[in-house]
Length: 52
Image (cartoon, rainbow, N blue to C red):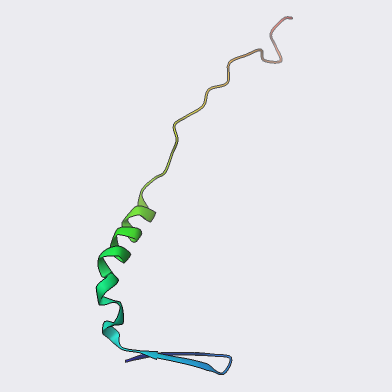
């Protein structure tokens, strides 16, 4: 059994309550560790030293 209490409210649940969701939790955790990117950007144009 696990229990949690905060500000007078107590919650108690069995250790196995989340067993059905372990696959989903592991998948979510794996996705959080992956680097997310949409690509890169390059700026092309005049710099401050270029003549107009």
